[in-house]
Length: 402
Ligand SMILES: Cc1ncc(COP(=O)(O)O)c(C=O)c1O
Image (cartoon, rainbow, N blue to C red; front, top):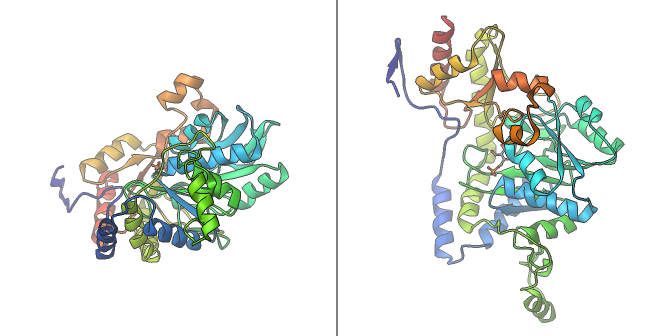
């Protein structure tokens, strides 16, 4: 990493994510170690309850990744609603590969829907055109911390009698017309992987208000174990008779499940961060405002992120789209050389894995293609300081020559 590029003194590396472990998390992790119980215990139970409360849902079930949560969430829905193999699920053409992969892994058919050019999320009008008699569900992806257009998508859900699983892996604690995203569909899924809003290393939540789905989800990520043992309320004390039933059925397996459990250590980290989620989100919003303040003078060259009027934006990242005449790859190379880490804006339709399966599909999704070629993001996490923001502004200024 160069210390100096053309007169700009590089202060430090500004990553797309950062880890911030407070004393409280360290204390909780040590407590978890002292408790001698590393799999499902009181930290996971408290983390799940706190997360459910914050998202105004009955059940939040913590497992080992956002992808696992999506995988078992969709599996539980497929089972509960009796979907046959090959039924169709609408998913945006710009998202992380996991959204599409879990549909494939559940032997369902992903039907890609182009996105809108402002928020980069599923375009409801495009989605409607893709609905067939085989469509069973819709998977809105709340990208970069920005809730989808839920008025329109919930309208589609209702009109066509579809189920919904929200991929909210990039968006936590964000409300759309006052309602937390992740709580609109039958199931909502979140990730606590590095660089997300809460960071536990690996981890993910599936949330639902449906007790049957909750039991099913918890069972599926626990090898398909009998729900008598995996019931979300199983920590409550029961009578001796009930206890005997649990003991007798504890080793029953009802489905072909998965081993997707998290540990108490992730939950201890997560519970500590739950105590200060408001502060984490406020810092992300503050950083986004500050970045916009220093970058808006380049609006001739850059499309900067905006917030939907009807929703909060929690800025898991700060997405930017270059305008005509700007070479995206040259710009991000310049940023990287100056210590500002970047990522492409979740290109999906040009991934080698899907090209191999579906051929060249990129041209069928023009907005996604435009974003594949011109979009990228930089970090917006709480560790970014005012100085970092000034520095970012200067580096862009240097690139654009003013
Ligand atoms: C939109 C989206 N979906 C799913 C995932 C998968 O989450 P995890 O990495 O926890 O499996 C991610 C992760 O970054 C994501 O951004």
